Length: 530
Image (cartoon, rainbow, N blue to C red; front, top):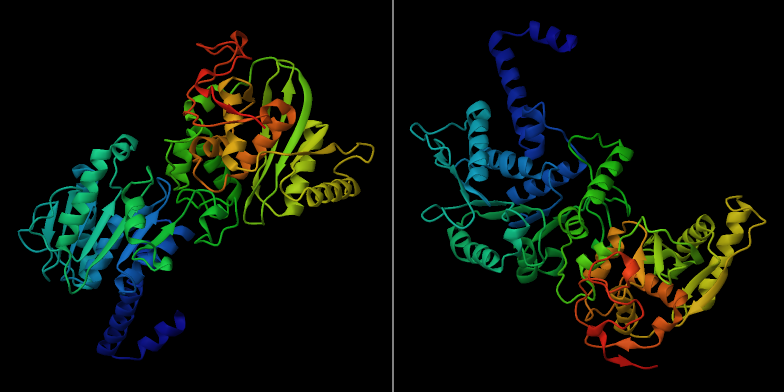
């Protein structure tokens, strides 16, 4: 800096001013590289995080015309709305001051707050890019700049008639779950977008950017993806899906995260991985299963048509009833590869005749990984048996488990004097539906209980559709466990089973409205023999 000052000291004032102006213009141009760079440069409280940088880069690509439809799906409260619905419109007007921007949301109040914030940026910072409010443009929800552009902020469903739109931003179009689950509300939203919103887009330059937390399979994002498709599939929309916890079921993670790695948060340093994991774990623990997977993982699933209901699964949670294990076991549903979820479930047969599920360590794992996980779980729970599915490479499973047990003993994780549990195959029904329905009946009859909260397993049971060609690993592993501990459960399969709502166990179950434990649940009257 001293050298630069010394050089300026030998130049006349006009040359110094010219160089300083050039430096200022270069810095201003650099700030307009993308909306997140602009926000970071102007707002000392804006916290850069990897996911916000990714979003900022995508918004800049929209500005360059690389695509004209962008859908951003994240959990609540991670900075998406501030970035996309406030800084991005200001950046767009700085870049294209003649354009009209529409910012919409589920309610007028929220949309108005966005419009006021954007206007505040124009008034405070706009002079640097010759962006100034038009005299007399006093309305907070509808204002113009001197170059001809402007911003209108309204709720979805109204307020765009007569307003030309170059950039349409849709920020959280659904107010809450009740709104998203209302068929009439969803239909009105889809109709508004198709008729009123899209009809306002201009031919010279136009784009739509939507940001939301997922609620329902047919919410705004779900319908757009279904009807117009993703760019990588030949469709229209660039989709950035950022679940709270990376999951390979969604494909390659946009941030390059490994399975299980947490999403950054603006109020937690990116390097504080333990704090991030704890934050999202706390959200998972305090959310119902459906909300965790919809709001935080961006993966809403229909509950209609599933074999068991969320209500039933909640009633099956029991951490207080005294019970004595009679046979402790671990069950395995091997994965087809390292990107598939391998089901590894632990539990026991109690002296009350029920199967109690105690552990779920399922995850995307290779054969070496799931066999290690199963052996560790078996040792920790003192399991005497490891059940493996007969239908899937029995010999390979046995070899993998034996190899892992021996390695853990060599590494002294398991003492050498501890005998490996017996490895027993379970021949389950070939069809996925024929496997799962008898276990659903066991749940209805209060013959299966959960010794804890297992949101991932509950979510699979409450959303898996009998028409799906594949069933998730946790469902298959829990079926194998019950089949192993209660062999008679595999004696037949049930057809036309209605959605189970509550367990129908014995009086000692402690659940109101129960019936005798060994009595077949009346809705499951028809059975198919072996």
